[in-house]
Image 1 (cartoon, rainbow over the protein chains, first blue to last red):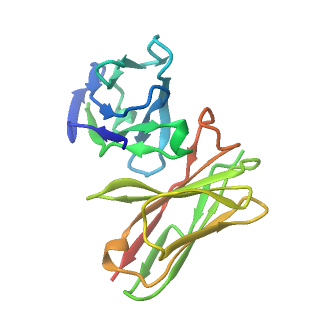
Image 2: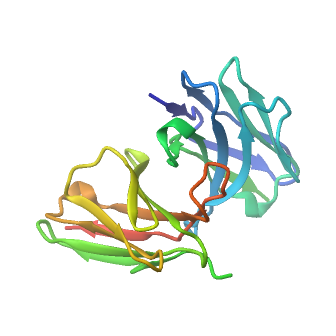
Length: 115
Length: 114
């Protein structure tokens, strides 16, 4: 079974500062994909970043980057130069080709960016 | 392109009733997945449809069902509603349903069961 754990229910960060959201997962698979999704107060989930497990290089998307530690089954999200628009729920998600096109989501981290 | 749309956005029902939710994917997308989001259970996968066929199903009772039409629009039906069915129901679409495709989520339908 696949499980995704986000141990930080709530976090806050000062505007322009850097924050790291944690995510760990458990799987016996070797080939899988990891994602961070953002859900702003308007409720529409938006893909932030994705990482293929077979790629050793950490994914980056502008101010967002991940620290993917496959052996430790850890997938943290770093947000640099935090902006007020980054305030949202952040969900870590796992997808395994062998179980079809479905996400296994963590419980989310509520991030507040303080002006 | 227009994004994923879901109707209605809000719905109030009473126990025992049934409800139908609708999801229109992004034009050209053929895969639609449904998720239930609750404070207690988080986001849980309901099912996925591709080209009018259910391709994958989560661990929900048979009261939850769905279908997909030839234009890729999908409906989800919940019969004999229970209080615990109160949730935000999200759908997501992708072009072919491959794991490498980006899934785009709709705004959700907020269902309240009284």
